[in-house]
Image (cartoon, rainbow, N blue to C red; front, side):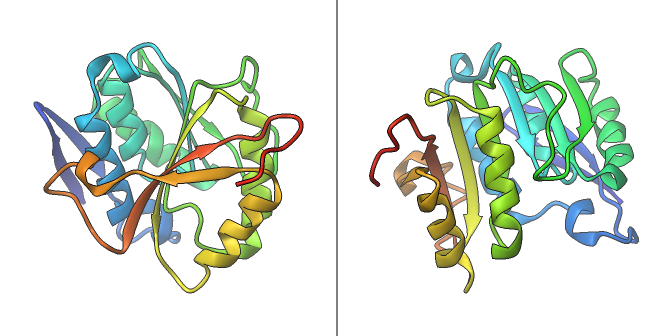
Amino acid sequence: MLREIDIGDKTIVIHEQVDFEDEVGATVWDCALVLAHYLEVLSPQHLRGKRTIELGSGTGLVGLVAAAMGAKVLLTDLPKLVPGLRRNVEANDLTHCTRVQALPWGESCEEQEPRFDLVLLADCLYDSSTTDKLVETLLSLTHPQTEVLLAHELRDTSAECFDKLRGKGICWKEIPHEQLHPEWICDEIKIFKLTMPTVPQPSC
């Protein structure tokens, strides 16, 4: 199914695979929309030229918005989702600034050096059983100055997932509603800015 999503003066084309075996990664979820529209309200200079990675990209919407705004983006997800990601990159004519790579959480990224300026995560913190591997990958890609933006839908598992972040020295701060896109505010979906650990690890 073809979906067109307006982000400011840009239209992002997304091919959703509604009959795909992994529906979780093949459709656009609300967290991705909220985070994509948050990027829309940032100044153009905020993203331009930034070395950016999206973890658990799914359809790639958030990373494609960042690329359309001038970032140099690497989209990542499980190997079975890579063909769909590449299709969406090509559909938006963003191959000059967007690459795609398979990256299961817990494995090493081929391009982790130098560390990334910006990491994007939309609805990746939903299963406490996968959080440790996600954190392992996140720590391997970042330095203390890396900006990490997480869109998160509140669930019964949220407290346990965030406890695992805290246990690794990762802190967070919620982006206030007044800084979000006014038409894309939802009480159940929060955007957090994560602070990566230094040595020694800070207390949150």
